[in-house]
Length: 153
Image (cartoon, rainbow, N blue to C red):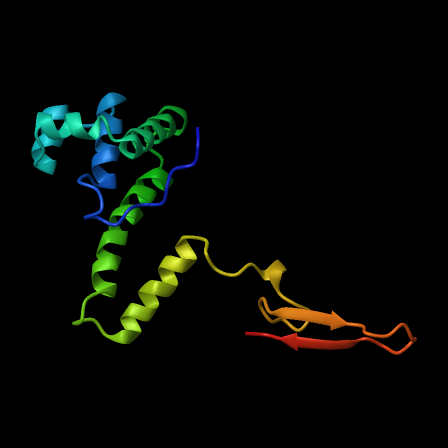
């Protein structure tokens, strides 16, 4: 199955990752009843009908169902579902004027780390720097060594 899209901050979709997990559990007969899930998430049958036509929701539920079928409700899957829900809390805190800059910086660093978005070590230059540009210009055909201009930004 294709990889799932990254979690979408709450408010961008009418459904949460936790709802997708609960629906997957219902469909795999591993969780609560559908009525219990609908009550806990305060959704109606009409809401479920709309989510059923949402390709991203269906992809997420399908992926979670496959995970449940093949791996069961592992600790890792439960932790992932929790972490995806906590991204909403992190998003809210990062954008709150009541939260200190230090806390915001830690949340941003953690999110980057958890998302696997940190610079890769194998991408570093010989001096340990990340990225940058190296240009070699040789304007003559003599045996003089080329002039190298480097800029690391």
